[in-house]
Image (cartoon, rainbow, N blue to C red; front, side, top):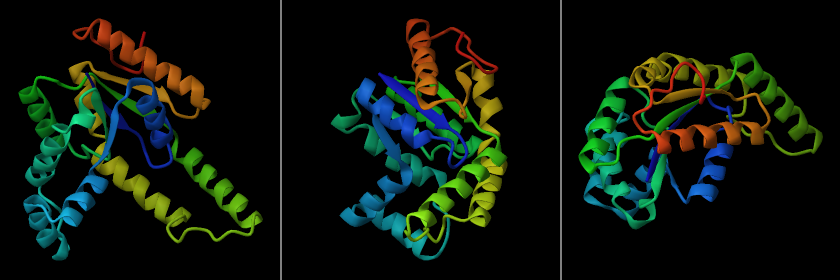
Length: 209
């Protein structure tokens, strides 16, 4: 089983790499946002509890999110492992996820950080907007430099502290997300294969190798 956390700022290529890992290893990509919407739509007890909190405009407490994940990873389509997308976002959530997976007997195999300079991401956004406008298509309302800068700040403040947290565990590798897609994919797969062949091996400070 491969349980993996994929970290990276918005626009770093997490979605592209997740899709490749799903195809290669038969993993299930889990987005907490998608899971939450499914629970609310299905009217489950957990979904009802979450809806009350969200309707008040409040953030869901970590225990509800973890309860949702615990329920989801027990489903048959997660049997080969999961890619955690958008979770954990904080060290408290990371600790809770570690405890949950340890209890299940399938701890994280590894954590991959896609490292991309924020200015590169802003440049990519400007190019995408220009190409969209050149085609005569409408630009998404949230596809703006202002929105991206806010999301990058949120990532830097909340999620980047997870990098030293996982590095200390020896399960993190940092990969240059500006490299060609296939180069990034090869680096991730190499890292995972090393982890699978030697789960106690310490891999840190930016590289499978």
